Image 1 (cartoon, chains in turn brown, yellow):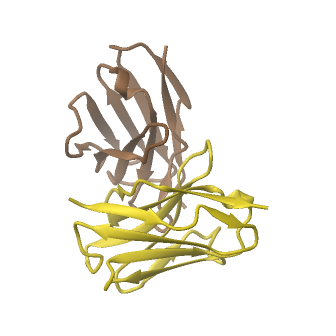
Image 2 (cartoon, helix red, strand yellow):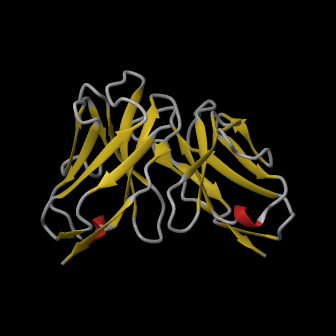
Amino acid sequence: EIVMTQSPATLSVSPGERATLSCRASQSISRYLAWYQQKPGQAPRLLIYDASTRATGIPVRFSGSGSGTEFTLTISTLQSEDFAVYYCQQYNDWPPLTFGGGTKVEIK
Amino acid sequence: QLQLLESGPGLVKASETLSLICTVSGGPVRSSTYYWGWIRQPPGKGLEWIGSIDYTGSAYYDSSLKSRVSMSVDTSKNQFSLRLTSVTEVDTAVYYCARHPDYGAMSWGQGTVVTVSS
């Protein structure tokens, strides 16, 4: 099973600042990684797939990078609506499909 | 536009069986391109994959739930379903259905809350 580890667990950022979230895979997953955003009471929303491709309708301030075992989600200029929990998920080698534990981006 | 909608009892008694249905609109369940999956999220916790099934009925389950879970597909109704037997309070969660390709990200339903009562 591929274990996905996200860091930090909580990220305190001021609006307008840059946020950098990390996701590490226990073995290489090539670029088969997705990032999701989840707000309270809502389903996860796909932001990024294949490590760096923005999903339809996702603002350009969201960008993904990385390959192999190290991945990054960057939010260039945090807006108020970006405060949420972010999950990474690998789909290179399944079953099982596995998620990271999440990073909560909170207002500083 | 693809839409997935979960339905089923919101309250299940411990030791009984949890049954949920996901109704798909905007695309056929009978598709060789996609899998149809279930993911759950216990209160205050992260996302847990339960399993995925294709339109032929070939299913993959998480090993921790394998002895209690089964999934099925009904192409005539454009639905797929989840059954989880012998539930306990640890099975209390929001249950999501989703669509995903073999190597691809998920498209999610809105989720349904299931509470297991003792």
